[in-house]
Length: 279
Image (cartoon, rainbow, N blue to C red):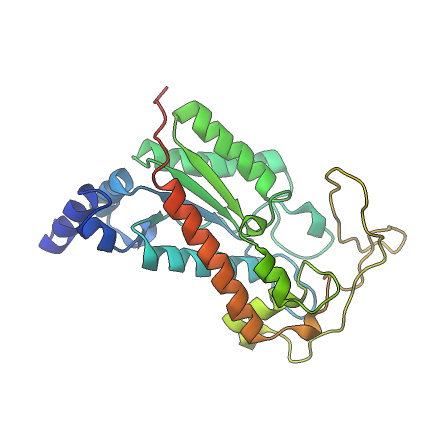
C-alpha cells in the first residue's frame, strides 16, 4: 500500500474529526481492492445509487434524465463528504412508462431482489450504513427499493436509508415554477436538463400538457400512468405532465442546489445513526 493510500486509510479510521472531516469521498469502482476493503469498513456511509438509464421523458428530453441527476448528486456527495459510492443501478421498475421505449425490469420482485443482493454484497465486505439513492419517486421505484432496504436492516442489522427525488423537494422548488401544475418532464425537470446536458434537450420546447384527469380530492395513494391507449383515461399524447416551455437553465441550477442541500443534510444526519446489532 502506498504512503498516500496508507495516509488516507489512517485518516478514515480516525473518525469524523480532524483529518477525517477533510477526507474526500470516493467511487468504489475507481479503487483497487485493498483500498476498497479499507474504505468499505471505515466509511460512515456507502451509497447505492439508482437512476433510470433509459426511461421516457417526453419528446424533448433524453431518456437518461434520471441517471444524470443521480450522477450529479453522487458527485456532490463525493466532493463534500467522506462517503463511498457504489457503481449505480441503471435498470429498474417503472410501470407508469411501460408503453414507451426504455430499459425496465418489469418484475418488481426481480428488481427488489437485485438491489438487495448488491446491497448485501456491500454489507458483507464491511459497509456500516447503506444509503439507497433513488432519483425516481417514493411511490414508484422507491417501493421495491424500500423493501430491499428493510430486508438489509432486518437480515444484517445494517442501518439503511432510502432517499427518493420527492424526499428532497421543498416549497422552494414549488416557488421556482410558473406552470399551473406539473411533474414528470415538466418545467422543473426540463430546467434541470437544460442545466446538466443542454446539448441533448430539444431546441423547441413543447407547450403545456396538463392531461385530462381531474384533481384528486380524496385520500389514498392512486398509482399514475402514462398510457398510449386513447381509450384509457390516463392517455398521454406526449409522455410528460406540465409545461416544459417555461423551463430555463437558471431554474434548473436553482432546483439542483435545493435538492443537493437536502441530500447532503440527509447524509450528514444519517452518518451518525446508531449501528444495529448483527444477527
